[in-house]
Amino acid sequence: MPDQLLSIDDVVRLTGLEESLIRFYESEYPAELPKKILLGGALFFAPASIAAFAGIHARQQGAESGQQRKKERFARVITVTSGKGGVGKTNLALNLAIEFQRLGKMSVVLDADMGLANVHLLAGLTPRHNLTDLLSGRVEMAELIEAGPEGIGIIAGGSGILDLADSRAQDRCRIIESLVQLERAAEIILVDTGAGMGRSVRDFLQAADEILFVITPDITSLTDAYGLLKALHQENLPNLPIHLVVNMVQSLKQAADVSLRFSSCAREFLGRDIIDAGYILKDNTVSQATARRTPHSIYRPNARVSKNTRTIAANLLQKEQKHSSASSAFARYLNLIKNGQQPLPQPRRKTA
Image (cartoon, rainbow, N blue to C red; front, side, top):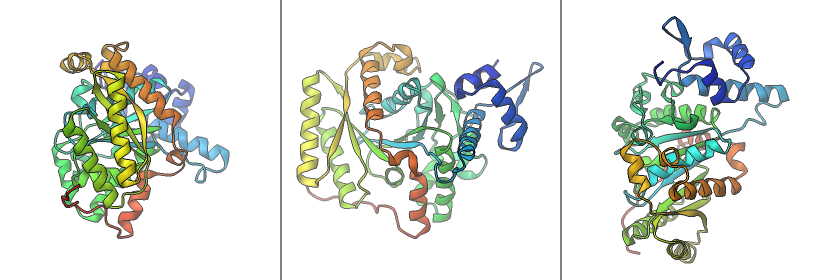
């Protein structure tokens, strides 16, 4: 059976639903589910079925309580970003999703790096569709979700998504509306942005519940990250919780020193509090796993980089913001667009 097709046992495992309930949803809501695929005389489910079943189940649970609209739950949207490339942001986003999934949180990684979309490569996937297909109208959001390691969902990026930067408000509304659907099908969405402060990065920083900054001890990483944070502050980004991960450190002391330096500058000069989410020790396991197109949390779950990532996931869950699941982050941003409030303008370079 091809890797992209799922048996009923796979669907039971990935959704956590009883087989009888899955069969019931199949009979009651056939129009909301992707068509099953006939192969070798047997019918298989498409990967997009996981999100569809999850959405139906979430809606049914709300309806049974009699307060579906009032108590509808949305995913916690965490935008993972950095001031410069090469700091391990994409690897962290992917492996965090795996650790969240292991902790019982249905997770999806949205590859929003417009120039170097490569989450699918690190996960060992060959996606059938990517965000370019959504922009062109060829597919719906549910069809983009690929089944990744440990049952996480992965939405592949594509170079065509660069069109988002210059698209009309009505086109951007269509894209954000599709992402609202995604919020009903997952518990945590990790948005992997490009580095820096491009238009697409600003879009996804606005459309988040929380921001996760990734830096390294390298002086250029620190200065670029502070420059990005300063630009966000100057352009009045909503006062979202900002978490910090210091990656590729040689020791706990180095991690603490770098975190303190960054946090102190943010508090003193910008009045922003930074939440320390943890650190990741430098580990050759990362390059070995990347060469095998396997997430390090799968390749070597007991390696120190994997253990550090697991700790960060646990820290983030402990600090979960209540509003993250009570309202839709993408819907809030959609309202800004529809009401004519422009997203953050391109920041001008200023001296520190």
